[in-house]
Image 1 (cartoon, rainbow, N blue to C red):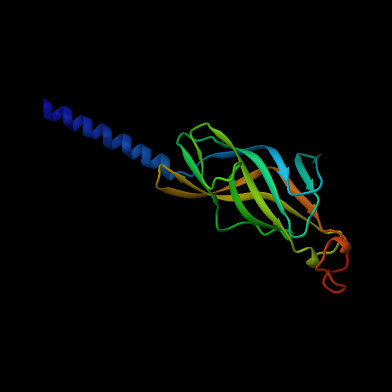
Image 2 (image 1 turned 180 degrees about the vertical axis):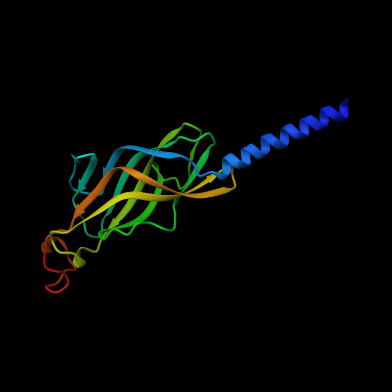
Length: 184
């Protein structure tokens, strides 16, 4: 009788542990919500075009835009966001620098159903390679995550707003020359 009970307990633990491993192997379900703060620009405005919400920011050559938004863990397991994944989109006027907690912490831990403010840092540069009427969008970010302390996933997050900046006129693009910018 004792042997049978131990066998049932062991079988139950194996099934429960296997279910946990299967759940942890699936990429976490994360969602984003409206930003808390935009810093690193002199001006910012939000407008809607159809079903898109666009955050227009003033370009500052050599500056860093800090875009803070809410990140929610919609999954059943805790997840740790460990910053930017290696592969990111390549917008012309922005370079992905970091994704941190709102207070600068490198790792952001979210329990099931929890949310936190995170900050995406984007360096602004490259205006000398675009015409003064061109622009650049950032619509998503790829983040490294960890679940159950050992399972890594890269997750692509769609930002709550599409970040847009325009290439400034020559006077505000210090490295531009008469031949560095295409006509337009």
